[in-house]
Amino acid sequence: MSVQKEILLMIKKYKTIIIHRHQRPDPDAIGSQVGLAELLRQSFPEKTVYQAGGSVEGLEFLAEMNEFGDELYQGALVIVTDTANSPRISDERYKLGEKLIKIDHHPNDEPYGDLVWVDTSASSCSEMIMDFYLAFSNELRLSDEAARLLYAGIVGDTGRFLYPATTSHTLEVAAVLRNYSFDASALNRELEQISMAVAKLAGSVYQGLDVDKYGAGKVIISQQLLTEYGIVDSETAAIVALPGVVDVVLAWAIFVQQPEGYYRVRLRSKGPVINEIAKRHHGGGHPLASGANARNMEEVNEIYKEIQAACREFIG
Image (cartoon, rainbow, N blue to C red; front, side, top):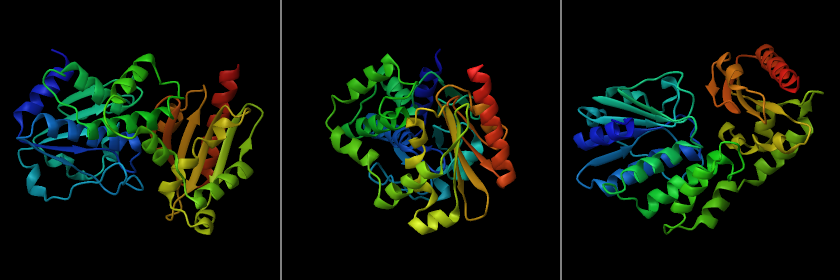
C-alpha cells in the first residue's frame, strides 16, 4: 500500500484534523497547509479541519490561521506540511494530537511522525498536495480556493517556474490548477509585490554585495539598516534572490542580523550544494536553497568561507 493511500485512510478515520506548517512561513508553507485544509473541508464536510500556527507575516492575502484551545487536539489527527525538522514546526501543540503525519519535499533528515511522506523530487509541498488530490480524485473534491492556494505555493517555491526543481510534471500540475476559477494574474502580482522600503533595501543589497573570484557572494544586513528603512526580518525574504541575477554570482548568503544579535542566514546557489553547509550551522534545506543561523560575525565569516570552498570545488 502506498504511503498516500495510508494517509487517506488515516484522514478518513478522524473527525478532527489539525494542520500545521513551519515558522516564518513562505507561500508554499501556507499554500500546502491551507490548500490541504480546504481540500479536506470540501471532500469531508462532516469533519472539522483547522489550520494552526503563528503569524503569517505578510501573507494574509493567502490565508490566516484559526484560533482554538488545546482541548481540540485530544483524539485529533495532526498533519504537518513543508517542514523538514520538528523544531521548525509553528505552534508546539502539534505534539498533543493522537497521530501525526509529515508531508514534505525537503531532505528527510528527521522522519518525525507516525506516517511520513517525503518527495524531494517535488518542486514544492503544494505540488505534493495536488498529487495527493490527483491520485484520489474519485474520492476527493478540490475547490477553487484550494486551487488558488496550491498554485500560489507552487509559484512561490519555483520562483515563478524559474528554479531547477521545476519539472514538466510541475507545469502539468500548474496547468490543471489554472483551470479552476481564481485570478492567477492578481495572485502573481501579490506574490511579487514589494513595499517602497524593501525596494530601497534592494538597492543596498546590490551596493553591499561582496563576490570573490569563484562566484561566492555575501550580503550582511544589520539591524541598523533594517531600522533605517523601517523593515522587519520577514520582509527581507523578498530580496534573497537578488544576488542570483548577477552574472558572476554562483552561490551566496544573505545574513540578516536579528534584534537579539545573531544572524538569520539564507543560502542560495546556482550549482554548488549548500544544504550541507546549512546543516553545520543550525539549519538545513534543499541542495540549492537552505537556511541557517550564525551566532556572531565569527560564524558569519565561517559560513562564507565554506561557501567559497564549495564554489571553488564546483568550478574545479
